[in-house]
Amino acid sequence: GAVVSQHPSRVICKSGTSVKIECRSLDFQATTMFWYRQFPKQSLMLMATSNEGSKATYEQGVEKDKFLINHASLTLSTLTVTSAHPEDSSFYICSARDKAATGELFFGEGSRLTVL
Amino acid sequence: GDSVTQMEGPVTLSEEAFLTINCTYTATGYPSLFWYVQYPGEGLQLLLKATKADDKGSNKGFEATYRKETTSFHLEKGSVQVSDSAVYFCALSPSGNTPLVFGKGTRLSVIA
Image 1: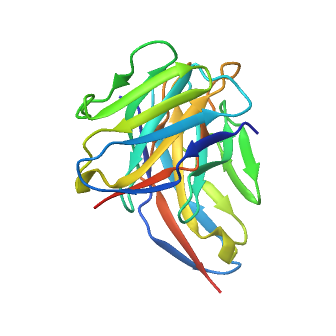
Image 2: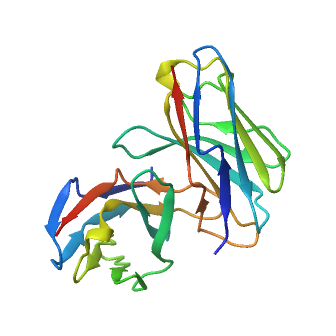
């Protein structure tokens, strides 16, 4: 099946710094990518929908200035957590839909962010 | 709006026991239905899917049938193994390019 790769898989940073997480579709083109956040022992919360070449659409309650999303190409979307704080510590997962398919999403391995 | 409700866990079973995780949905139109599995410390993997009523998705011994009349997509496995211990998410895709709507997840622990 299609492969979505996230990097880094784990990152630890100091409070106040910014962290960038990359999401790449390795063998398909993704016009749309989705970013989710998962709290411990909870379900996935959709943060934003990222469309190639346009601004991301953020879900209610998600700060767009804090979670910067860029989808510069058909195979890459990035999530930057700016001025990170301990409450931003979480598991962030991206997913991508194959441009040629409908319905099925392919998920990255996730990135665990720990802010000290 | 569209939503997915799945049974709350955790579910603890002995090896070789029968597994059922209930999932019901609310949606307009005819969504596609999915089960994803998340092993400890990992991302989500598609387990199986069904795109229309009466379709049965199956993979790795797991099965789920798309029941439009009961708006359900229950996950079953006849004989679970310790390696099946994970969190299972039921999800639906309303249509087109919309994001998936997930249930809250059910944690399964299988003990030897």
